[in-house]
Image (cartoon, rainbow over all chains, first blue to last red; front, side):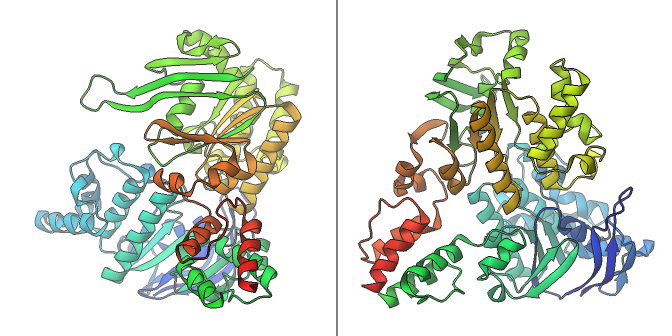
Length: 274
Length: 284
């Protein structure tokens, strides 16, 4: 479990608090989505989870390890993998498989073990055919999948993904999200997904809404996503399907359930009504 | 004057094993004072086209006529002059930002235009405010300390401060949140109205382009696949799908319902219209 207790954080030369007295618990094998507008503190929170940043006050504990204790650093980062928004900032090698091997090599694993981990990680993200390719010839979505493989090769218990798809096109976004859900399914790694795109949080166990450095709500998707008014208030774009349902209900006297988030479901619901 | 693109070709790494044709025989016109949208899946040639338009890439063939001059034939020095008139904002702000302070970053372009300090300051101030950043708060901030949304805004401010008559924007709203997107698009339409700035907008968000642009061009595998008015394009469900473009949810819904025998009017081009049609059917 990752436990954050009364965290505050502010950046150097900046009086404003990026995070204010924030407490949160993230369970093993959980899929937690953290959403909020630009500048609400999402990326700061992500970097606190694996000790890349340390809280000014309060405590972050990963499976009982306090991230502020220097000697815990390596173990914390082994447990919590962090993926950055722009894959080019995270890729380090000229060949895909060497990039994925970078982490395992650095923690001193045996060559056989490294080989095995690289191969399984690449298979997990469906990129095994690209093992010998240079990353710069890959598409954005493929690059992001290679970065995910790089994290997987370290066998983390938690994966924190900071807007992994904000720079990708719709097809690549879907591709990355699908890989994440598959990885979670197969390995049980907890996923902490930071995003402001609500289409990506439909399968989350819980959604935490971050607003101005504070957590406002933690709830399952069904408890939040239909409330288009509230979502707009906190600077999030409601799902197009929710807006559509809202409009149709105005025309036909609220016959459709507002907690439908997938188009197949809406088609069925409408066909029942007709 | 309009920009005319004629039979434009671009090939990456020609005469090597990695040779790749990115643009094939692209022809279209960008009218004066128009906001034109460019869509297409990743790798369809959108960014290559933009970079050809401001002379960063030199095409393998074809013409780009800007202000009556074919810019594909110009020398590097002459292209410098052209770029003052046709400004390009990159897809990744990280590739564009290099100054340490926000003020200097935005002032870089105007200073290079040889403007005096007072005018530079005025432009920086206006550009930052227009992109939704508080001037006094941000001017002395370090660019490295900005959040991703703020970096995006600063890089756009740098381009806007040039006050170029032509603006080329490569996915300017990627990474921005909902409010940021709306504010930026509103600002773009404002400067388009106020200064008749011609804007070429590359985006993956079809709803955004439909509501902002007078015309939209769709690229597919380096070719110009479709060109038309937003409403007309939206009705072209099959063609959009074929180019790997995410269609709006309302259109997907109409398509699916029609597959189930609903017989809805498929020339609908907006969400309220779609809701009305579906509402009518439900009410019988």
